[in-house]
Image (cartoon, rainbow, N blue to C red; front, top):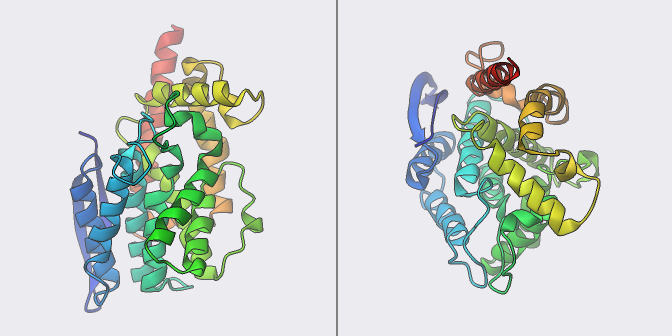
Length: 304
């Protein structure tokens, strides 16, 4: 079982406490839900105690084939655990940011919309009942826009107003590799922060996982299926010739794409996971660096 063991700061009655959140099993929705609930109520003691369990219930329904008209997720990399990894990271980042008093402040509702957005950010991999060819991985190149469309469908059914649906969609769109962030029409600076934090957590959560390296061949298979489905020659999913090619290029991807994106495009929000803030070590980044070092050692071993 994959676990993530990181420090998170909580404040109660103005007193800083350091709580070790150890061994949160990201394959266990209940474990992640409990951690997110603690972060949410730590930020907003008067918040709706039923909100987090409710929206976790919604996403589990979606990924297990209990949302009307849709099958259970069958993508092997972008599965429910992938979503839970990002969700856990987002809750921790926003909790630390909130307790450090960073501005603009996110309201309780803006946090709730951010949580909805990350829980729904990969629903674009879901297939309808009539979609019988291949897996949802074939939609990799278009999954971000499909996720935004699915979010509008689900939230529309749940009675959310158009302004909140738009907010969730904009946050989801932040995760797109080719999204032009300046073109997104956020309704507030706080909503933009939530969107950038979501995209940050999406990257950190998956790349810090203990089994990230072992799952890279599965990620390649998703890219290959998407490439065959689209028939297009260019684009990110067509950047890799084989599983080994993807594995070999991953350290460069981290250094030359992900880190600059975290630092510049997403305005360094990942540093709210540093302990102590702002210049202490970042457990997510440290785990990714260990993954990259392990990967490079394996590659060096092959070359001998």
